[in-house]
Image 1 (cartoon, rainbow, N blue to C red):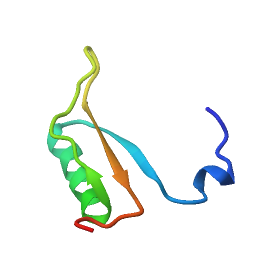
Image 2: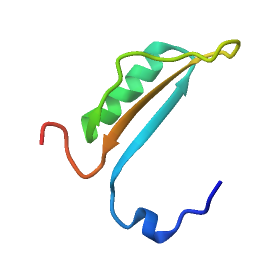
Image 3: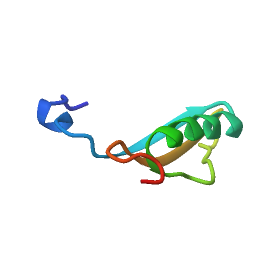
Image 4: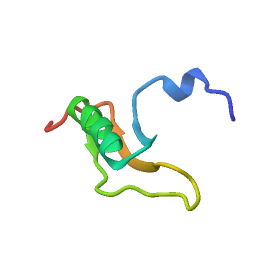
Length: 69
């Protein structure tokens, strides 16, 4: 993994969030918590890795904006 430099975090920017959990209900609950606090492009479906337990959910958040702004 590459080092994080001060220039990388000097200002909040859109970020990709990936949540991994045991089930759909858990990942959507976490997504709901995050989308209440910052602008987001929420996902509507999860993905599963064949042969692996649990689900994943990916979506974008923008820490510079509040929801509905």
